[in-house]
Figure 1 (cartoon, rainbow, N blue to C red):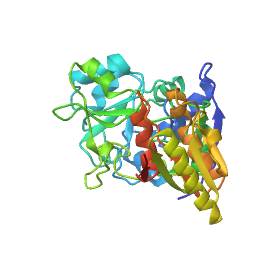
Figure 2 (cartoon, rainbow, N blue to C red; figure 1 turned 120 degrees about the vertical axis):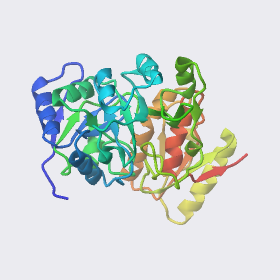
Figure 3 (cartoon, rainbow, N blue to C red; figure 1 turned 45 degrees about the vertical axis):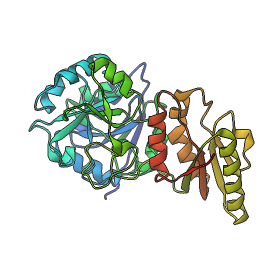
Length: 354
């Protein structure tokens, strides 16, 4: 693709520079791509209702064109523009969680091109909880289709520098709003089936969704066991995601067994002249004997683990390691979301030990 000069503008979320935002909004309206911060990860934005903008997003990321894009809105009334009809469940969930890290899948209206939805009759919609993201949507006068602002398959970007590393020269502008707050993508719930179904776990859990809806929210079995035969209804269901360049293995079991097994695996790799990284926690990091030991934070702080995940995977690339061994992170609240990302990064390669 043709290379361009990518402008990087620092934007303080607490004191937004309107001149910068007006320029960014104009670029979106003219069909260009702008990367911007949300509360989850950085997004790569284009006009959601323009097929050519969707094509540019897929091209910039190297993303398969049957992988749907999420439409970002700034006002609930915009849901009526993109949905064939707005289900009552969507109104309840929006009241509880929007703006916030929840994406809802509904039947799409004719206004949304198939290029945006990956050829699906459904559309994924969310209202981000970030002042820069909301201001960009409003300034552009568009609804903004935005997947994560990274090269397809790489760890998602949680800082503007990650976006620049992957997409400089491919997009018009990067809005640098500092590090993101949550660090993993939004929960996706499908409201087009007979029962509401979570297609991607995130910060908002199935239990939280069930409480608001007053009915059981089920979890797509594809979250646990990848099923590549289906057409993906939501971003990230079908393709390998979040992957560092080195081969990665997750080791699961009791703490003592995991430490023992990882150290044995590390020793074996080092004997063969390989540089090895271990992803651990503050509680266990001193127990390992690898070339590189990266801490996700304290095991008791789930939010910190989620926040550090993608940055640590990118650090492994920067350090040019040959192999990565990671502890498992079955934490109580958002452990499923963290493990979902780790399993995809490792290509579902897990060693279970007692």
